[in-house]
Amino acid sequence: MFSYRHAFHAGNHADVLKHTVLIATLQHVLLKEAALMVLDTHAGAGLYRLDGDYANTSGESADGIARVLAAPGPLAPALQAYVDTVRGFNQGQQVRVYPGSPFIAQRLLRAHDRLKLFELHPSDARALERNVEQLDAGRQVAVLREDGFEGARKLLPPAARRALVLCDPSYEIKTDYGRVQDMLQDALKRFATGTYAVWYPIIPRPEAHDLPRRLKTLATKLGKPWLHATLTVKGSKMAPPAAGDSRRPGLPASGMFVINPPYTLQAALREALPQMAELLAQDRHAGHTLEAGGG
Ligand code: SAM
Image (cartoon, rainbow, N blue to C red; front, side, top):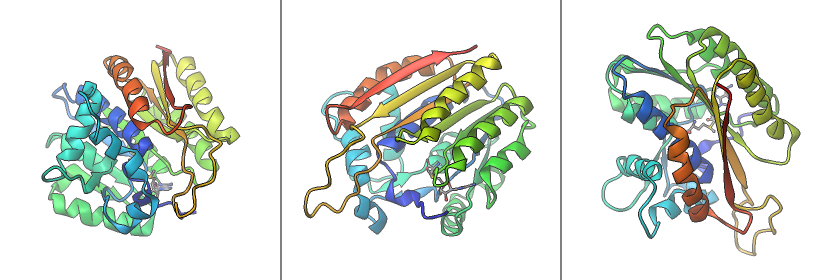
């Protein structure tokens, strides 16, 4: 456990999908004046250098955010909002700093909203605490060195009766898939009207394959609307890297499953996903899916 460091992956295609969905969701939810609590069950370090050692070793942002930034034509509004948010953490044209989900959320929240960040990795939790201190956000943001699955349960239902939960585990251990499902089942019991957004990798592993199916069944059984978006950038059987290319073959695809999505999210993604797939395609297997149900 704990070999995963998000710094290697910051700004990759999975982050483009996840953070575009997060921003589009938050933008809609924040149209209402009432206070919102955001729970980020797996927060990471919060801020990443794209020109630092970790990112340079993996080179993943070159096939993620960098391609979106270099898009030749106008972007779909949801992708443009994503780019604008990332650019907001940088000065000038160069994008060297990449905001993780905690900093994206905090940038969009209002003073009366609350952000609870769970992170268990000792180094990333320390980095997150240091990064959050710089914000001087006072009581708005709390960093908790606790298990995010358990922590989220404890904070639901929120006093303000409005919450967005982002669940973005590293899936280093295969029990994470089952824990996501258990957490959501329990969270929906405690707080049925919250918005729940889950990221997961699409990899040839039965647990990964089953997760969206199980979440659909759960949401549908409870009569909750759901939205499921996937982004594939390449086929899963990759040729070995060329000589001198130190990058790992990497993740071919990932998905976002949102329960109680804002009603505007489907239309926003219908426009953004085809463009995302086109910009991030690494081979002819690239593509996207978008399906909705429940409710
Ligand atoms: N959500 C972040 C973002 O979008 O910027 C990225 C998070 S990364 C995919 C997953 C993080 O979860 C890692 O930093 C890992 O250390 C942390 N982690 C792993 N298991 C955890 C647990 N049970 N509770 C809280 N954090 C955990």
